[in-house]
Length: 197
Image (tube, rainbow, N blue to C red):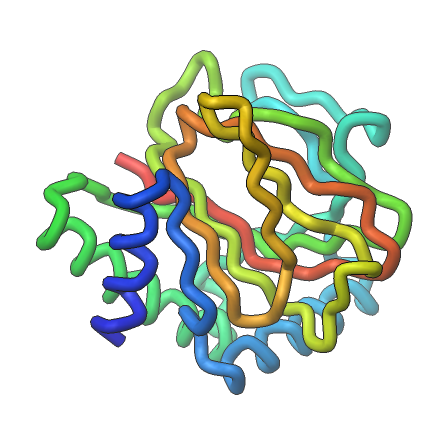
């Protein structure tokens, strides 16, 4: 696990975008995907908004995904296994990089065919508690033609494209890099969240 964590952290230090191909095991990725699909079939996932509780907006011209917040209180074995990985990662990140992370929040995310999320920053204007953004993809057999790439915009104007392939994890500062989800041509699944202090 330490090697996987190092891959994510070292690539972040090198390029401001950390990427690990196998942050989660294939078994856990698949279990989480099946859980997401079950929640969706039960109509438990809700339309996502932009902004926070002080100023939230729902506009499908900006953002078209549906979400469901993960919580240990659900007593779901797969969610708890995911949280165990995140607890280990936060402990390692704080110990090796002195980041001072004290918490996190994560939700399942589903972009149905034809949806997207326009360019944005993850840190709120009225709340800077989100320090690092993380996206963990759950899509098997994903092809470039399926769309749904994550476009990350660097300060030099370059746009980095990330295919949302199962097990791949992306990690970057919430306050620094604008990013967007391109139009997806089939359902696109992930766990999305933020490390906070």
